[in-house]
Image 1 (tube, rainbow, N blue to C red):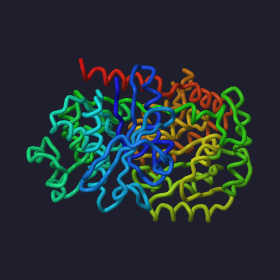
Image 2 (image 1 turned 180 degrees about the horizontal axis):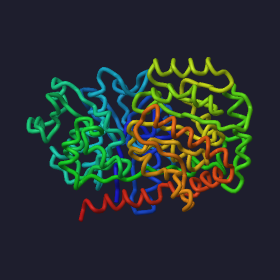
Image 3 (image 1 turned 180 degrees about the vertical axis):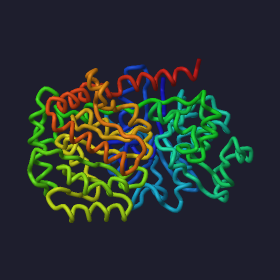
Image 4 (image 1 turned 90 degrees about the horizontal axis):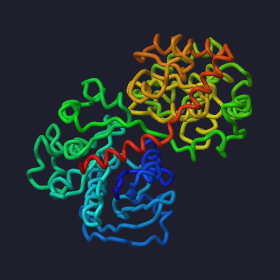
Length: 466
């Protein structure tokens, strides 16, 4: 079975978040199940630099009124297609947030639909709003290609004014409540959810949550109406990239049977973040600094965390007031809190490989990958009980400890008291070395590779033809 996977980013070529990791890992996860996946992404400058001398396999004279061509290459040994449209994608700055994002990603979706139809793909798999118009183009073209839309985060929907509709090249019949119309404008994600043969989210709990007003972000009615086609499949992680036994980013590699070696990495974190050396609990945060991630609540608990003997190394960026709040906390507690504003992939590996626990107090989290990395690296996750966090971390309550299955700490509502209690529980468990090592090893033994998730995606594709 040939599948065209369409997304705005894919690791290792271009990445802003977990979406890229998932898209980059899917081809290898699907291959053992008889699925050949071709990945299609835009030709951003960083992508174009890796495509020098690539073969041109298709041209458009006017794709959303601009010339474009399709380049063929490989990504991690699997087929890759790059939409080379310089007027749309060869720009400085971030991948998103451009005034004409509607045109840029409509072009990606239109091109993907053309390729899927003309080149005989069985399934088109669209990831998030940037690719979600592709299933709508297939639907209104009357194509036989099956389609899947994956929601990585329903909060990001690609909503634009009604004035863009005439330029999308869709028939007038698409301007309906069961088409692309959304509250008087155009909804890219909404269109993909309405048109796809199947909808997936990146965890079973999130698949249920987005049927509620609190999590559905206005699309809960559509999700509920199509619930029979909605599937929750937990993301995996790539052990070739995230493995403490082989990770080149770690000063000291280690296994679950040699956790003492992590101290070398802990010392490296202390030097990098200007922290006092010590064996007390070292927490980390590797996150966007936003309200969704619960960073406002965490910022209010830092004085208490330090008072209980904890330290924090934070790597992230986001809302300016939250960046300022964490920097202010670091100034109040020199040697106890260290902050790096920005993102650094090797440094994120070091933090997972040397910190004792990772804080993830998200208000909602479709799946989350940092807690999976933490489990794999013995960096114990402290998470909110939501979405994929609830699905992947087993709370260290008395029953789970007695059964020998605890892998981390969960807390309920994202509030001062709830988070403070979770941090206190974590610090108490850390003071019991035997218990702490058991929790670490339980997480490291858990299988969050793509083996099972790849099989479930393959089964889903095949079910579309039953």
